[in-house]
Structures are given as structure tokens and as C-alpha cells.
Image (cartoon, rainbow over all chains, first blue to last red; front, side):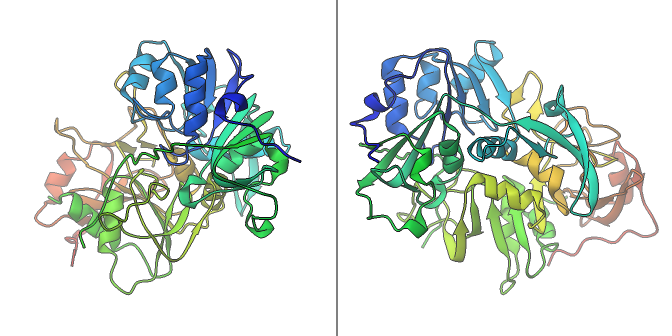
Length: 235
Length: 219
């Protein structure tokens, strides 16, 4: 089943104003650079974005923020972006901060066909406000858990290292992060890959996301892969 | 009074052979430098690494390999990579033996605040809420007194909390404390040269001192 599209523009052609999009990546590591650029160019607006972080001022999701294309961000950590902070404090941008594990598991639940999860993260904090709490005995201890809903984004967009034309995906090192979970969550899932290969070239035992979850795939180009914190030691 | 390195050095003594350890950003990260040679531990980074190694040599950075602080890192032999759901899965399932994280405030009943200063700083909780809600063994590394001279070991947190009744051990520039189940900071060790009186003045919450409290041994 060939899922190949020509490029990012074709992959995001029907993303519309007001839609919800989940994106893979941790910081700037493993973000779908080509699709983000295409969304900037397309100038779709009023987007709700689900992503662990919001990029930096001039890269990643920061580019969509600069163009004021995002109405709401759902993230766990947004500390690297001055424009983000400005829009949030001025009230231009709605922000829903949620625990990182909750974010990951709410995406995972969608791909596993489960409407809710229960997690202890955030019990007794602001995050718990208005949420159903249930007490379970588990792992030998009785404690409270919050009910959290699975995300149902219109689009899910990820970047993988390798993919085949059937949509099977392989990630490299920590670019994996949220991406397999994001990929499983989309009504339409788009994957951009560094290397697009033919069926049979990927070892079936090494595939991180089976192609059934992926609707469109293309080979990306001109990856910058910017490093946020370059830390080294001396030889 | 201990500097950041000193706090890290003291906390490193709590790491035991065979531990899987999650280190938060800041002082906790420094702890890795003081793990005794030959001790077999595995570092977890919540963006999806077990077996995290030191920073790469200059020129060997890989933009595809970072830790939860977005710093370039390396992998040790035997390392594994996984997605974020599994990463927090192993945290929730209490597979990680020790979690070391920073805090802005801790209350005498073990509540912790470290993710938000309303109107000033809203960076988000990242993985902190998941960690404090699930980890069985958490050590907090923090400054007990801020630049304005105010104690951050409080009767009750003033900032939005990250987790409820979850902190049992704290290491600060002044001392080592257990947070007792019935409430209160029990002083276990003093930083070199710091008196109990100094610590008493620097603790806004309930301080419990029993007998002679020893100075900590750092080396």
C-alpha cells in the first residue's frame, strides 16, 4: 500500500484553520522541520498544537508562533521561547500545561483505542482541577489517580529517520521521544523521513511504528537539526 | 555553607550500587560527577534513555542524541532508547530506584513546588509531576535560603505545588533533612561549619533536632 506523497506541501494540503495537530519531537530534537515550514507557508491559523515543547523563537514551532498561527498550545515545558512567553502573558495564546508523562500517555491511549487513562501525576495540584479522581489499590499501595482523556488530533505529524513507502517508520536515537505516540494518534498521520526506502529494505523486527498508523509519507529535505544546548567535554 | 557542587557531592553518597537513577536539571545533573568509580549505576533520562553517558567530545556531538535538559550527551555500552510513554511507564511503575530533583519550595508535610511562579515564570512542569507522583525514593536538591534571605523549607508551600506529600529527603546548602510522615524537617546532618542555630533561623517550617547532629562527611 503506497502512502507516498511528493512533499510537505502535499502532505499538509488539507490542514485547515482551527484544526488540532499533534507534533513529535523533544525540544528541537526530531521535529518535523519540513511540515512546520509548509504550515508556515500555507498560513493556516487558529491551530491547536499538541507538542511537548514549543520550539525556540526562530525555529520549530516558534515559527508558527511568530506568525500568530497558533491559538492554543498543549505542552509540558515551554521554557525556551521568549515570543511564546510574551503571547501567553498578554493572553493572545491559550496554554494548557500538562505533565510530560500524561501528555505521552494520552497520545498513546488514542493509538491503543482507549478513551481515558488514569495517572497519579498532578493529583492535588492545579492540574487536577475539574478532573475525575479515582482511588485504586495498585502495586501494593492505595492512592488517587486522575482520569485524563486520550487526545484526538485531526493531524499527527512526525519526523522519522527511515520509512518505507508503506509508512513503516524507524527513529534514530532520542528523536524517537514522543513521535511513535504522536504517529499513532492522528486521524491523518503524516511522516517525513530522512531516508525513504522501498518495502523490504527495513527489517520488520526493527520497525517502531507499523505503517497502519501512517497515512502519508515523504522524503524530507534540507534538515537543519539545530542543537539547543551544545554541551561537550575536552579531550 | 555548601555550594552547588557540595550539595551534589553529598547527594551522590545516597546513590547505591545497582541503582537506576533519574537526575533532574541543575544541581541533580552534577551528582553524576561524584558517583564513586566502579559503582554500577544506570542513568535514566526521561526523553527516552537508559544508560546515558557523559557529554560528547568536541566535534562528536550528535543532534539526534540529547538528554531531558536538551544537552548533547553520549550513550554507554548497554544503553537503550525508548519512547516517552515507556519512559514514564517505567517511572510510574517504580522501576527507577532514585530520583533527584530541584525545588523552589518544600513544605513540612512533604509537598513540593518547582514548576511555576504565577505572573512571573511559567515554564511548565515537564516530567516533574509524573516523577514526584510515582517515584518511591526522591531526594530534593535545593537552596534552603534564597537571595532575599527567605527560607524555602516552609510550613506550607506558597507557590503552586508539583506534588503532595511526596518528598522524604532534602539536601540543601545548610544540611540534610528527612521529612517525617507526621510532618516536620528532621535535621540529620549539618553542612561543615554550620551551627544548629543557623539552621534553625533558616528553616521556616517545623524543625526537629534530636541530640547532637553530626557534620556531613563529604569525602
